[in-house]
Amino acid sequence: MRALRYLFFTTLKNRIKELRRHPSQLLLLLFLAAMLVLVVVTAGLPREGDAPLRPMAELRAMALALYAVMFLVLCKNGLSSGASFYTMADVNLLFAVPIRPQRVLFYGLIRQLGTSVLLGFFLLFQYTWLHEQYGLSVPGLLAIMLGYCLTVFCAQLTSMVLYAFTSGDEGRRRALKIVLYVLAAAAALLVALPALKPAAAQDKLAAAVAAADGPLLAFFPVAGWLKAAVGGLVGGGADLLPVLLGLGGCAAYVAALVLLIAAARPDFYEDVLKATEISFTAVTASKEGKMAEPLPANVKVGKTGLGGGRGAGAFYYKHRLERRRSRVFLLDGMALLWAVICIVFSFFMRDVGMLAVFVFATYMQIFGSSTGRWLRELLMPYVYMIPESPFRKLMGVCRESILQSAVEAAVVMIPCGLIVGAAPLVIAACAAARFGFALLFMAGHILMERLFGQVLNKALIFCLFLLVMILLALPGVVAAVAAGFLAGMGPAMLVLTFWCAAAAALVGFLCRDILNIAELNNR
Image 1 (cartoon, one colour):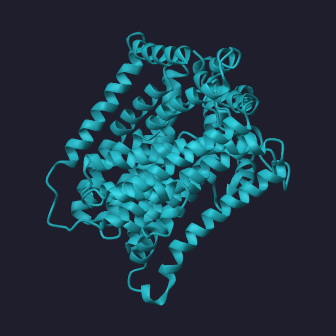
Image 2: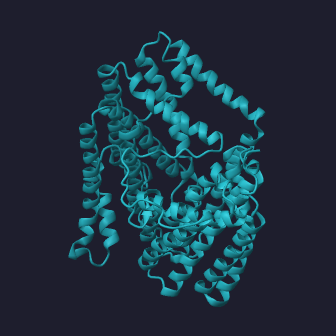
Image 3: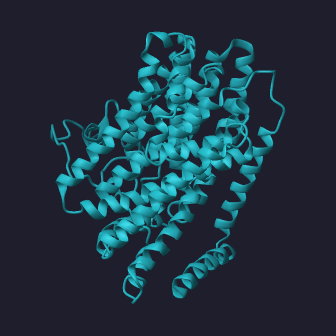
């Protein structure tokens, strides 16, 4: 046990020392700290008007939704690819030394708990609007973040256990997937049915929130328990009973899973080895500037063949074929998840207006802008071999993503606009502005690839990307604000759309030779 303790603290100490040798990582931490201070200071400014705070039950319902989605998604992914608390260095070192597997498992759990805390860091940047709308304090936000971290930790541990006991048994794996789907459907019905009753015709949102915040969903595995614990801390005066019950239930759940895998599967090394290799491959590909896209075990082929295209135009039909095989309804899985989050957010912002919904939707759009198929094509060698001009190839690679961005803007903004009761012109203008930002973000990624290639740390490049996007969008935002004072929100959004499209076109034209020489992206 002393060897594992020495390894843990030495690894932690070396990571801190690395900040001196890697200034980019130190700059990233300072940038995040400065942004976090700005968020807290901004939230501390006096609130405009005397608008009442929204019910705290809505905040608890949103926490339940976030925890439940993360728990179910991670568990479902774990059934297919497993979950690992270890790196390849751990596999080569710890798995081969004479240390009891149970102690190695405990070492992995402690390390994974720290990783889960880092995954919840993004919630801290939501403090401004949560404080504005619900009067949430900093300790309350930390409680929500802690609940999220514990949810991720429990979900990853559950994934590890599920994969260990279903590996090689497709029937058992399929049965557990059905159980997860039934859990999700049952929770959705418990929330939706009270809102569909005639008695709730006046305020369906209040009825749905009351059901989500009710005692029945507090029994939802992990997510419901942690929602109850967090609700006891942020509900205006600490209520210790739900806090103790929720945290106690999670502690008992974790202990049961650890005992289960330690007692029933002492040779769990073989079960986590494949998941560790998958994680290592993804991390290595990210460091090398590649995009490792997991291949599904079963592909619905349907129609085969590109069906058209010549030269650079073949990329459009290739991406259409890939989109058709991966999408759910009009969007693929991840884009659909972002859309659902924005639509759910609009329910809680009905009294605030369309502008807040548009800002939130644009903020969420940033995180999905780096996953387009066009970005993967820039890293493939054959794109440089097509005998076309570099600019024509760049447009061919981006063409399908541009059209898909227009579809996504309509799918997101139209339901959101109808929910908040915005005018049709405002809804159309917001959809156009969201499409304009999609073009701007696409151009920003092209600019980052053209300037830096695969040289710098990816986290630092993302911060530079955010800074460049702010600088490019700022003139359009200023012009839109001026137009909003003069003519209203609809014309303001159209001005913003025009500026974003013009800036994106200019950046694309200036970076038109990005596909001229392959070494530009691999310096």
